[in-house]
Image (tube, rainbow, N blue to C red; front, side, top):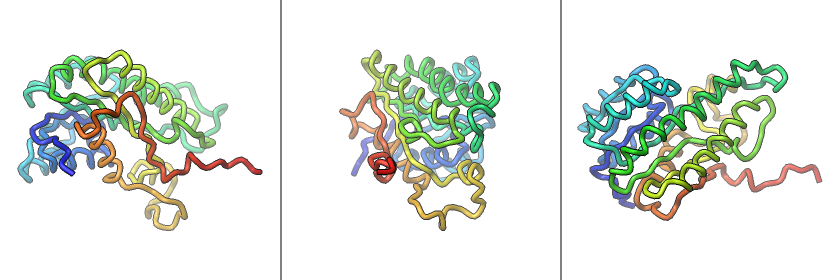
Length: 249
């Protein structure tokens, strides 16, 4: 399927990570010019993409620092000649395996700062640029944890639920830009391997796991004009697990 993205201009946050890197590579393969944002400029990925003939610029940006986000959005729009797409992949898991009563306030606030406030700041400063774009869209990486909960991850689950509702609320008041999210189940990334102590990967876990490329494809479809009727919602990609009741009856 031709996603009709050739010539579009995109900004990707969390671009040095597993999903963000996969999104960046997939966008360039579709003929999109991109700005890659992360706390440390993902120059290695940008350089590799340029070597393959793509147009990619790397920008060091702290997702929770408003002045840095504003400057990065402006710099990305200037470098690319505008913005049509924003894909927010910046996120952290925070405490994993820690009960709510043992979670520190600092840890809780850090998770919300990155996962929710970071998305708010990105939308706040990118929407004016996107409104001038072609078929503009913003897509965020949420989680199935926005809908179902796992013990020991209260901060993460709550933050992803807040992110999903932010997407809905922002889209309801936004007339020109489609705003959506993807809610994947476990994705094989360095962060998830570290969280679960699976240094050798997920090959023996006994449950289905997505790749970063799988999620990148979902994100890019939602960002494309092919999904023009999809707005103000989260696409759940979890192999159907949230449809199954675990009630012991």
